[in-house]
Amino acid sequence: MKVILVVILCLYLLVLSKLILFKFLTIPDIISHFTFSYDDYYWNNHNFIPFKTIIFYLFIADINFNIRVDNLAGNIIGFVPFGVILPLLSKRFRLFKKVMLTSLYLSLTFELIQLVFKFGSFDVDDLILNTFGGILGYIPFHTFTLYKNYKKRENVELKLPN
Image (cartoon, rainbow, N blue to C red; front, top):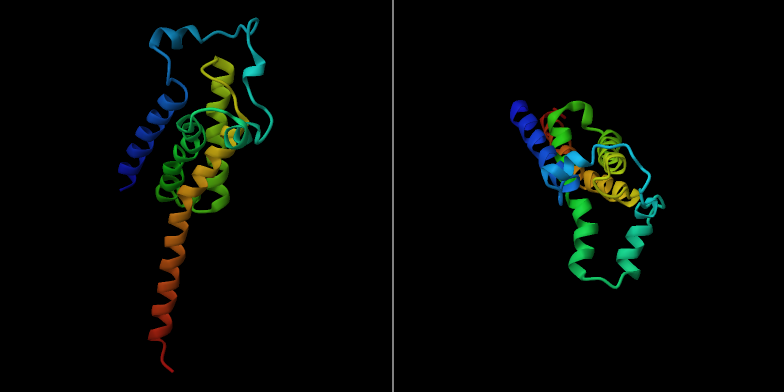
């Protein structure tokens, strides 16, 4: 079972990398981005202010609804599988804090790669939304674990003599 989960995690991370880092890039484009020249770099294309993009898409932007959904829900939904797979893969990731931090670190890795290699724009709100997605993925696992432990205790109590 663990080998299958590792394969699923690897495939998921490949798909996620394609969606986040290489969504509009061809192989020559990717190669051309491996430069550390920031002379013509547009720092105003990035967002370092928490909730700025989220508020913009929810309340301010006069843009198509589908674009709003893609940008907000897409960032959340993209990380839900990560929150599901982690606790199934290893007991070390069965705590809320571990799943939350690992989701944050993975998201930060993607955002820093976008920033350094100019594959997109860094957005602190993506960190928030991606981490929230990882947490949402963890909730069913945690709920099932609580239910399973409750049933186990209930069965033990029923078997105790009076």
